Image (cartoon, rainbow, N blue to C red; front, top):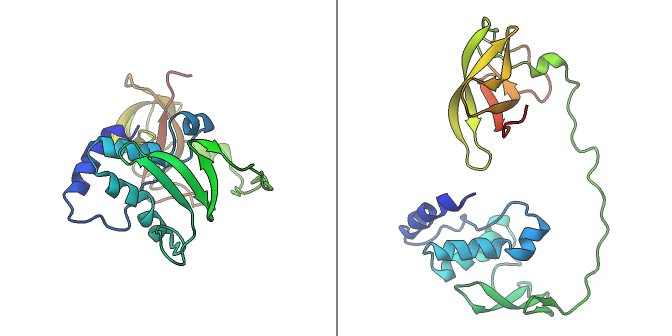
Length: 223
């Protein structure tokens, strides 16, 4: 999804005399199958290199810069006092990793583990989301600037459009029973999932008020 952005990112970074240390190469969470078939950070580095970034610069984004940004003075460099977490690459351009060392121990060779993997203890992250009680009124989408409900008809709403690459946009929605429906008049349908607007009732814990904003997602034609 970010591929359309990468050529311009690479071009902008190429215009700099040196890469700032706060720019890093990282990924969001990925499915296990994606990691197996494409890779993670290594896949991102291959794409950056493919769009013209020098391989050494790309690798620095994922190593030294990443360690610096995280404040990990024990990582990021092959130097005295640093952890011996190392990879040996046979092809920098293809980011082909042949050997992996963890704390100085040779743990992988050409994609195969040399040591057994032990699964550590895992505690499910339960009861981590705590919000105040919600009522049906909290999910009413108010589209008037003063927070009032407009007459039955249509109204324009400002929305955040997109999932990964987002932008401000406006859509025209139907207003039924003095409430905005989740079906815009335009052919590109979206369904509203949250709202906060100027003039809304007093803020409850966790509810954002002040600036009118409606978070929407494409519903792929689902009712």
